[in-house]
Length: 228
Image (cartoon, rainbow, N blue to C red; front, side, top):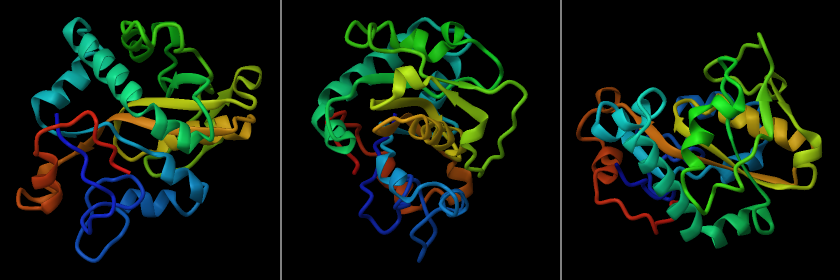
């Protein structure tokens, strides 16, 4: 499990808090998405951790979907503690206390009740009664890796209208699905959405072992740290 570097650092993407090359403020994926995604939405993306791929933490994030067990409990505990520790920060971004906790839906047609992420989150007593279905993926729809496309998601207007929503994602790669789901919630009438990825995936082989971001992400993890 890795720390998330602070977004004011020169080597951190100002949008998704991922690593960037020298002299750039945005990573490639964010440059593409920011052309169409609502500008204000980026300030509402707050990863809990970084996950170097490969690493034992990344392996847990993959394993919980098929193996369950301890990996599910770890995700539930981390998410519950993080959301509790940063409730005031989340409320500040949302303009009030969160009213809905939901997840980025499966794009493989898996129903919400069978989706491993809400099942994992409901293992935490503090989250159990608050994790609900608020958005689903449109059958047979498609979305690209760096594409902002809210139309591939369908939000429940009765559930989200006027709501302040915490949208949980397990692993942030390009951000296209998470941001598009957030956009669908906003278009359905949500007052505000904060996207909270459990981990921001980082591939050291792409950036190089000496990149300052990677050095920072390997520092001891502190659940009380707010990366924004």
